[in-house]
Amino acid sequence: MVGIVGSGKPFIKSVRPRARRALPEARGAVKDRRLMTSPDTFQTFIPRGPLKGAIRVPGDKSISHRALMFAGLAVGESRITGLLEGEDVLATAGAIRAFGAQIARGQDGSWTVHGVGVGSLLEPKTALDMGNSGTSTRLLMGLVAAHAITATFVGDASLSGRPMKRVIDPLSQIGASIEASAGGTLPLMLRGAAPAVPITYRLPVASAQVKSAVLLAGLNTPGITRVIEPVPTRDHTERMLTGFGASLEVGEENGETIISIHGEADLRPMDVVVPGDPSSAAFFMVAATLVPGSDLTIMNVGLNPTRAGLLQVLRQMGADIEEVDRREVGGEPVADLRVRHAPLTGIDVDPALAPSMIDEFPVLFVAAALASGTTRTTGLEELRVKESDRLATMAAALTLAGARVEEQADGLIIHGSGGEPLPGTPQGASVATRLDHRIAMSMAVAGLASRNGVSVDDTRPINTSFPTFMGLLEEAAAA
Ligand code: S3P
Image (cartoon, rainbow, N blue to C red):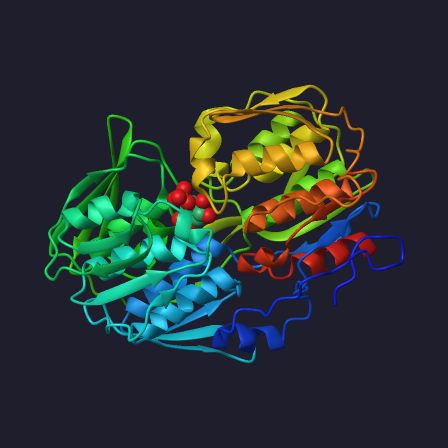
């Protein structure tokens, strides 16, 4: 049981304990995790004073998914260091194993993968349980779409409500046949095409998942598959596929990015070092900025420009975040971030930055709720189709905690408290997290910057992306 926040006494009250998902990898990994999130659901986060010392956030989720997938497609043994051992990534590992790859976790925490080779995926014997993970689902749909196999994808209540038409459309064009549930959602069955037809696909939404699904299909499609990206999104697929030996070109035409992949590809195994996840670091960046007296260093944070929007926006608002020892890890820019408490001022957030901080808006909304003045965000329709409707969920959560929030169709307007702690959730009430890990962690941060604490109905989804979150909070608060 992890006791967090609350002067000396454990701050967690728990009800409804639930069993952790019984993935074999999860069981293996859980054994040697020191700082696991408690399996309890309901928790109250109260102020604990400044956050100090140095912490290390876990591996990047996007990069971890891709490392397992590409290693599973290479012929031979790849080694992955720093893999995120969260439920989403473990769902990908389960699927890659079902396609015939061998995956093992070593005593030292590194993972080895013996891949099957592009074109040689086995047909999974049972449905692929994607849990909460949209990235696993959409990328793996792309992979199956160009192989002569059939796979069924299922997921939890959150994932089963998320739109899959955005991948069904291009994958149907390459010849795959897909039977989805009403509204184009999971459960769905996908029959791959072999050979698939190469396409040129202009992304109708700024989505790295859709881009990657098409590129993964292109790996086993004869000829050249092209994706046209009007707005740049995270480019981990392009970077890592090149490292695994795929023939991939990135060009520009009329201000749009064009990515071309040559199939059928042979991937060679490689060693991947996964940098720390900027989306996980975000919670600590905001927490240390908001809590007076904080001086916290977050080690080894990935700073790929396609992911670094929050850093830019927080600095525009007045945050004091220093990049120490900029370097490269696994082909990605990385630095240690030293974050000191600073007062924030509300701004109009440039909607063009949205793709580079798409997962960070829930915690930015918390920062805005404590700033001086008003913060306006626009162009965020995509937030409505994440693990939850993040505009509605955060508007309700922050309002319950005493913030002044106006929900618009495409963003939130937040009138900040001017640095005054938020009142917190009323006695007996708790924030609805709606199976969304980032809502739970964002409102945990809000609790640290509140007067009476913020109660969260269900913290278990935190395990999908950041199993060590609670332990690191405790570590930073105790330092
Ligand atoms: C991801 C892309 C983003 C992001 C998700 C991870 C990825 O989704 O929200 O958490 O790894 O490609 P979209 O591509 O739907 O924007």
